[in-house]
Length: 450
Image 1 (cartoon, rainbow, N blue to C red):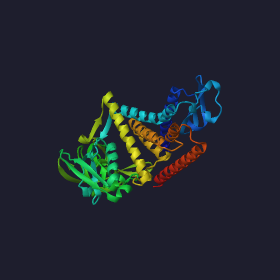
Image 2: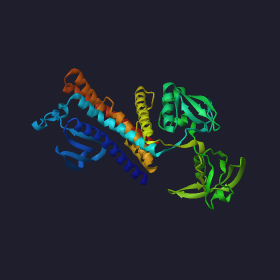
Image 3: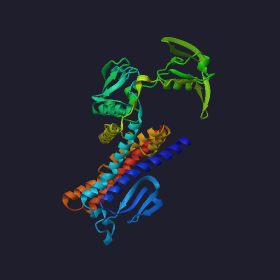
Image 4: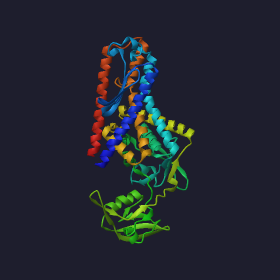
């Protein structure tokens, strides 16, 4: 219940912030262009709070349905314009001014993403070097020669500093021709090249949560080195000490601290053989796994905590105020291009449409990121803001991009499109959005049902 409430609150906050930024772009550029603003609303439906201010008596509203928002300009197409407002209606202003107003919403979303990334780069982003964890036998990764601990320093010709850039380039390479060329670096600094060839599997691997299983390796995680012992715990009682690296439990291999948690949690109260490494020597000890109650479920407890020592695989990405701007702009540009390519490849069938997320999945991501801290939530907002900007620039009549197309046609032909053509376009746009939302809700429900 608590997680659901957190997700709901985080979702409402995220959508409200990003919609306010988007609509403020339309609003402020419209005012600069001399247009009269009748209403600025965050949310749709009946206003639950309204504030009227300014010489134009503009209504600022918070409305009941927090899934969007709008700015309503005075428009001569909706009725007569008072003489004192002549020339201030949206359709009375020059076409370039109208296009600027329509572009402003998405542009403010991109500017917000740059601002969010600037804050993150300025404060420092704890970054885990992209590296190879467990490699599954007889997998694409195994056949390519990937080994546990290999750092991924480049995908194709693009250097990779973190998992985000690594995944973007893996997707790009894989979808292009089914091959993922990698430059790998071992712990001793030796570099080599390897190519993962997925062939016809590429489209299937673009489905959510399918990439690593399909490629055949897991992301590297911190090793199961004991950093702290719980007094009277199973490990302490068996003679394990800080610095021991656990290699296996009950014959099941342990390569990371995450593996250790998974193996131990299902063996509550059982006697097991724990294989570990101390001072370079392999050792074995028998012990009985402890027990703990978590959400009404009994789970195994070894009584150890991670050392947190991830050495060469961890670093802090931090830049000065000026360099952070260029880094933030580059990250926003890369993410924008990637989003556009993925949308195009969904249309051609090269990327699974299961990647389309609806409000349920977005809410879950919002809640998860909010629980992990402000930096994670800010990074989440940046990504969603980019997606919102790209989506609104699509040439669909009910979106900003479609309205820009209308204005461009009017500029080219010297007169507005016929009312019938505009109505047909609006109907097409509404149908397209209904189909998009149907896919999104279907995908959300399918993920919940597993």
